[in-house]
Length: 316
Ligand SMILES: NC(=O)c1ccc[n+]([C@@H]2O[C@H](COP(=O)([O-])OP(=O)(O)OC[C@H]3O[C@@H](n4cnc5c(N)ncnc54)[C@H](OP(=O)(O)O)[C@@H]3O)[C@@H](O)[C@H]2O)c1
Image 1 (tube, rainbow, N blue to C red):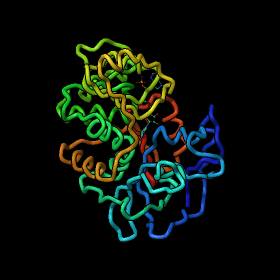
Image 2: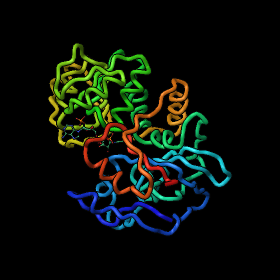
Image 3: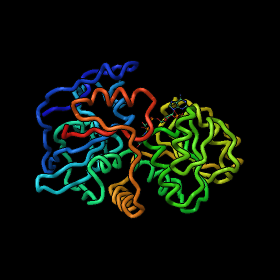
Image 4: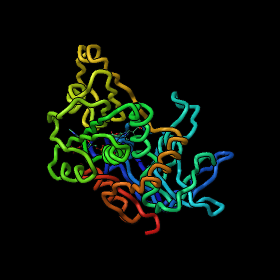
């Protein structure tokens, strides 16, 4: 089957570690099923894998990709939940493409309980945007951030998949949403999605209840300074650097909660699918590439010029 996979680790040049070519079908562990992938989407996770982060050399070659929507062996249209049990991992789980082959291929193997019905109103490309970035944003807002108790949300780094999802979801939940970006054009785009857009480090008109952090070191101090007493700063990533400076006086004086978040549960993905359909939301898509141009899709993601999700159409 054709696949996009990592053959080596290139910490400074991730695109050079990407191979597109033929691989055998994925091994199917006992009790698992296969899905014919119709659409997938890229995540920063795929670039980390190509850099060798979280993907040791003894697991190569490894098919990349966490997100997919497709058709199961019985002809059902499904969304793939990408977190699988993994007793060799200290977390007890891993994401597709970490130990088990990922979704950037014609077929992917998963436990049957990882298949959720694709809502009829969602296209394969739209559905393929939701299982990683959108699920993470939903989990950060609803479960970790307790956004139902909140009136206001700050989202750092407006262009990323997690950030655009968080802005759309928080706005649909009726919250006042602020979002930062270094780029004027991204600030214009995020404002169209319902956020008040600010430059990085810009002063907000109020302190917020919840901060969605995926940028890390460059924005973390601003996240803390923009937080109300008792606010939740929820961290799912550190694209801009993972060694943030934390002023502990602010943490205790303002009673801040700094919370880690990784993905979400299958039930949360089900709830997200219902929320998206119920509110007539469609994921923010930056660009769509046929599988034959999957290398260009990676280059696009790596450019930093992305606004929303980069989608792969597996039928082309
Ligand atoms: N834990 C999980 O389960 C999980 C799930 C999904 C993603 N993640 C992680 O979350 C992060 C976000 O991923 P993503 O795919 O949504 O987006 P992304 O492509 O990593 O970009 C996020 C934003 O970071 C900002 N940024 C990047 N470098 C920066 C720098 N040096 N200074 C300031 N801002 C910078 C950019 O904002 P502007 O250009 O607008 O300023 C960019 O739009 C990644 O690290 C990813 O691995 C984790």
